[in-house]
Length: 304
Image (cartoon, rainbow, N blue to C red; front, side):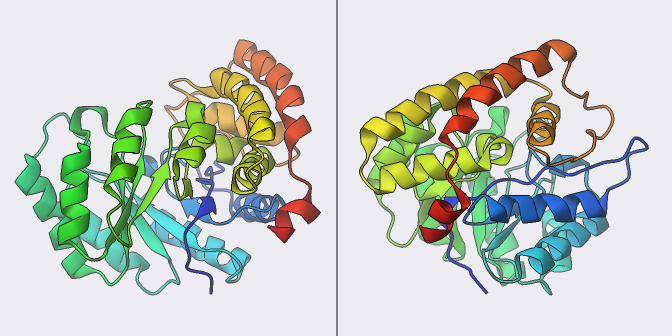
């Protein structure tokens, strides 16, 4: 089983039927699609996957399917998006029998927030109740953890192996990378700036762009790792234009449309999340035709 986390780890979307049920066959097909594109891992139950809408049973089933489909070829990360330490522990325990490489866990996301000591205690308690490594998913706008707090948590809790830095602030991610906490990982979810993130030394990405155009982000990663920065900059410019078409309040719906245009049918969002509008679809289609020119071939991706 592969447990090393690095490179392109797309947060899989969750295919729903019109009545809001999970389409397991479509989900399996999506995992296989991602593997064909040469990704280096898979994340289940993230924001792009509408993880906040999934019950513990649904999340567990989707993670189990992912583990079956990847069959040890790449690591699987399981997302936990809940509002209490108790609920985080319950989800983690439900996943413990599966070969999960790490948990991706948000701080609480309701309107109120704990202070820094309470946030540290949240992750310390979770770590004490599960054997699985934890990646902090730093994404909640009104409970955004500072680099100093993230470093403190990583230094004090051994099983917190890293951070997924979201939002659009590249400096905050650079500050984290500059700390160079031994043995810890920093993943970028700054979708608009994946190229500079990789150039600064991010260990990989778990973000919406990799979910929407996995082959292109693999090509970008490969170019940076090879030191081909002119090529990487060229891909970045096209990828940024594409990102600007899917970025919005209905991001999961836009990612699903992008995948469908590549022959990977992934259903509709779960209500009340709306699907992509006709205007969004037109913009996405135009940008998609351009950005897919940079897609890594399966042979090239598999060789990396």
